[in-house]
Image 1 (cartoon, one colour):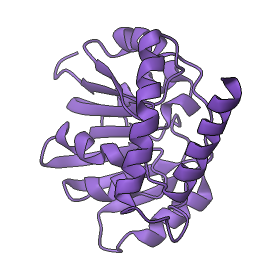
Image 2: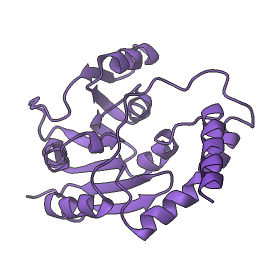
Image 3: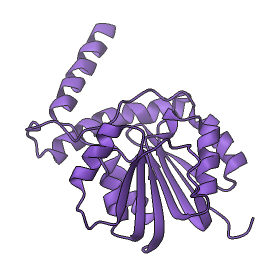
Image 4: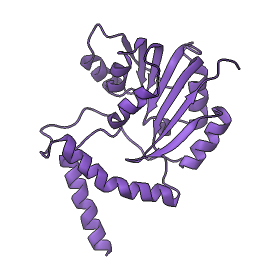
Length: 222
């Protein structure tokens, strides 16, 4: 049985490598629906090659997109029209940049598990203007039966989605450049516990494709 399971997993890995797709981009439209139709200033933390930042720029007066990887920030600049209201910066997500209280939206995709979560959530809260919205798409360590069940369900759906997005054909070229990845250390329960203390009222949900979402709106009054 173990040998059969290993063969199945290897076959799925080969299929997924031939039909790749971006799990984070899958949630971009969902993220936009959590935000107002018009924004003042937006901050995208861990921007990667800038796909979400460019979408935010269709709604925001100005977007600041930051990533710690100089190569991927350079790629984001190459892919962005000069007239787009986006500034890409090589920056530590936790750095004190003097922008506290400046943003009506802060987004963070597949980056929180690379950071000290307590410090990161606190920094995101500080950078939001009153009434602003934080949206996190994150990865957590599978810990409960529900986590493992949703992960198993995601395996065939992942393959089917890759096949559909590639129209049944192997991808002709590698997917867009992405930053280095690492496994999440915190479980969803641990993230939720932190959020209840730092971001009272935050809405956290498990999602397909090994992701969770966190949405929080900063009160207008302290």
